[in-house]
Length: 233
Ligand SMILES: NC(=O)c1ccc[n+]([C@@H]2O[C@H](COP(=O)([O-])OP(=O)(O)OC[C@H]3O[C@@H](n4cnc5c(N)ncnc54)[C@H](OP(=O)(O)O)[C@@H]3O)[C@@H](O)[C@H]2O)c1
Image (tube, rainbow, N blue to C red; front, side):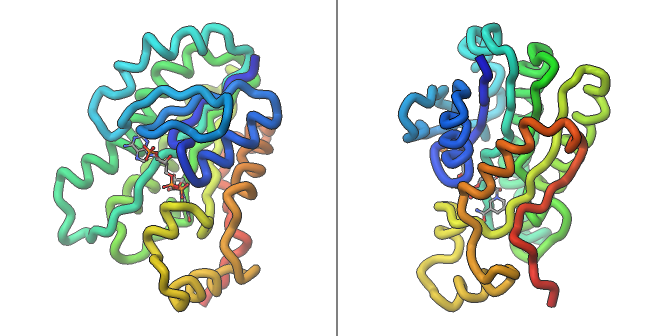
């Protein structure tokens, strides 16, 4: 069987990726605090911001890994908090790094040794993996670090027939984005106006890009902008 192992498929982009891979006949296993609502997706409930959360999952993960011909591991779970570089509590930065970086690395330790040729690691980055905007410092730091992890994955797994890349969504219509922008139509218009298509991205469009990337070793090491084109001001 082909196995998609994804973090954060209980909502938004992760849920769309889970749906897309189910349609393509992959077995899908989600790791998040809430279950993925897509029928037949399997769930391991966990809080990936808790230290050692991943290691405690090892026994439950083993049977899935053992039976997989090809694994696609998608590091997707993340939270954007409002914080600033001059007022950034260590605890908040640690929490962001725990979820985005330490948990992803822990999953890599468990899963990469069992990956066969044809497998892939897809890191979900952001426009803020390569640039910063004010007021979201811990997110910017974590998403930049994730680029480094993806590039190190590409280098360290050379010769194994496994590829890694990063998909960087632009503004995508998900629960996380709607919570951040609220109900203000002017805020929404300002955001959609940054896109050369004058609209938000549908989560399914990001899922299509991930599904393509899972089958495209030529993308090994690539940072892929999936943002409809952003207007430069
Ligand atoms: N939406 C955008 O405009 C946008 C733009 C650029 C990049 N992205 C990236 O796309 C990815 C998905 O974002 P989204 O917009 O789809 O957000 P979302 O709808 O809020 O989904 C976030 C997912 O992360 C999971 N998650 C959060 N904290 C977790 C924790 N402590 N332990 C386990 N799982 C946790 C959530 O599951 P539970 O709450 O059930 O745990 C949820 O399934 C993220 O990496 C985000 O940075 C999004």
